[in-house]
Length: 72
Image (tube, rainbow, N blue to C red; front, top):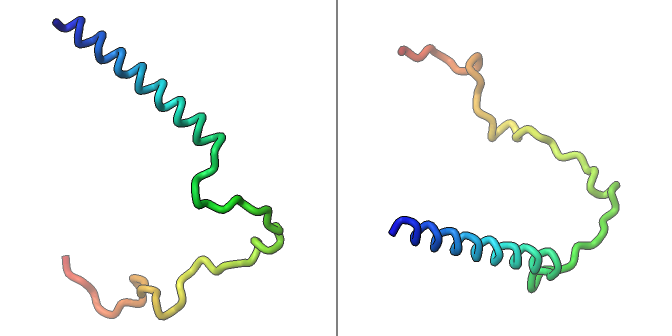
């Protein structure tokens, strides 16, 4: 009984791997439907500096800026 289940599980896993391999190959060769083809971009246009910090009105006060002390 246990050997039959192991054989069935092994056969299922092999079929599943074969199906995943087929899907992987199809995905690599065919573009997604409705997706535009990537266009080469000018690298200088992408180098626009974007600030990493939030604007002052969205920042939380630091521990030193908070008035008062919280008790444990």
